[in-house]
Length: 120
Image 1 (cartoon, rainbow, N blue to C red):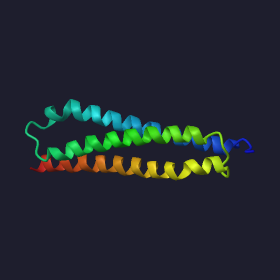
Image 2 (image 1 turned 180 degrees about the horizontal axis):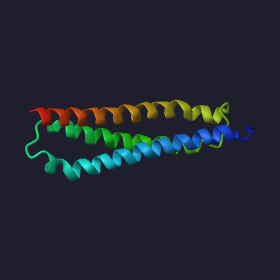
Image 3 (image 1 turned 90 degrees about the vertical axis):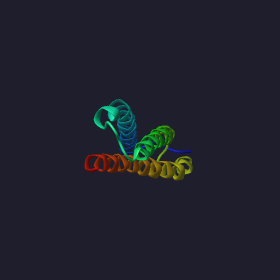
Image 4 (image 1 turned 120 degrees about the vertical axis):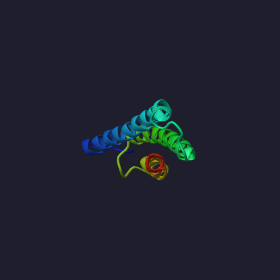
């Protein structure tokens, strides 16, 4: 039988939840800002596929960050050495890498889009 997680493990889980919550908020806000200001800032934009890519990657980040939050909540009640927690860990790491990768790709594609339209 597993013992309850100590205070450090609980705080770590809370910080993970905060991290994923912030990434979800940033991604959602970015989609709203793109949809609101794209036409107003760039009257005749080029490379609009970068905007589509960014919006898609922000959506992927939102989906997987939400999944990470659910996994973190599921793992929160177990100690770090628990077999129950270990079964969630691999999926959690895959989701984490997908969240970070998709968020960074979205930011980079918006940056490239902005530079391309300011210079060209």
